[in-house]
Image 1 (cartoon, rainbow, N blue to C red):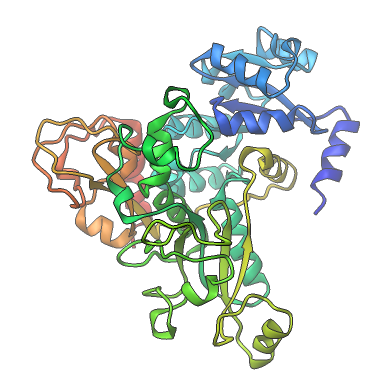
Image 2 (image 1 turned 30 degrees about the horizontal axis):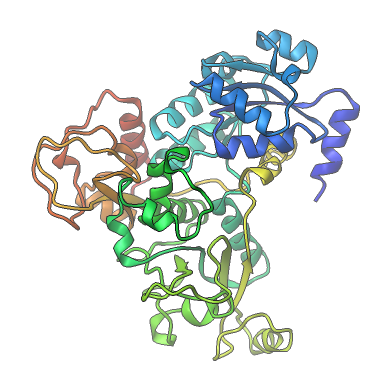
Length: 446
């Protein structure tokens, strides 16, 4: 790779890549601590609705106060400093920005920011995977039509998994499955922000539940985030989700190839060329040795006896039959690695993962019996969790996309465990996110 050399050239030429960051939460803060010391990168502006939080996060990330005191974008560009603003569009509408990083985590905001950035002529790195699975194929298509790059965010698991798939295919391997690890038990689907703390205490070194966003953390445990991330992978790689969704089988990193292969060969998969998420817990709740809770993987199938023999000779984690092999990455570094995406889109015009199809969807499933008149609270909340579903099945059912669920009022009762349909709630057809979703399904539904 030549990204570091290309960045150094931009630094030497006093022509840094100009970046605007929208949303200054954990992911963005992790990126900003590295961006400050990366040659060839200039963070022109950071937008967040809570400037006090943004300043505190920058301080935690090692930024001197003087670095973020530019009052305007003009001042930031002239001084090499950074402008903090509550108004994302102050940054998005400035044509001198090269790359916009959308890191709000809010689907509606992400779509609005992305479309405005494309209209202004900016590349977009979409940290906001919730927005990506809601309308990413459409957003990427709009960027390509404008001669721009829409990219998944390196450091987050979907982009890393896309790289695994690309590696495998570039080497001539058939991709059997790709995915990640997580903590999962079936009963976690019913977790809410009120009950998740009991689980989080088992593995997080945090004393005060009020110090974290419990709804956000809950989305990682109730299955929603796994469904979202595997949907992003499917839509970027063309892999197809399993009809029933994710199985979450318990597996160590050394058993991946034995577990994540088709059922007819002794594994758990109902199809090949799919996504799966393995659990770091046995179904009894015991931790699995050598688990992959923070990692990613790809399962490949060689096409010749010679290649299969090489798998065994070089200990490439084959299954017991020798017909499948696994490659895994034990962890991901989240925002600390995001600079790879910034450099790739700005300097090579190449995304680190990009949706090209609508293969998979994330639908809302009732956590409990829901009553007409209730207001849904979206991903990680009290009412619904996200489930991966083939896009064709989702469209046929008129299933409610998880990313549209927050704030919707139910128009009829829904039983626990049922997939919500669009007719179960009052959608606002004038909403930009709803319109983008409708346009995406119309353009990409097969």
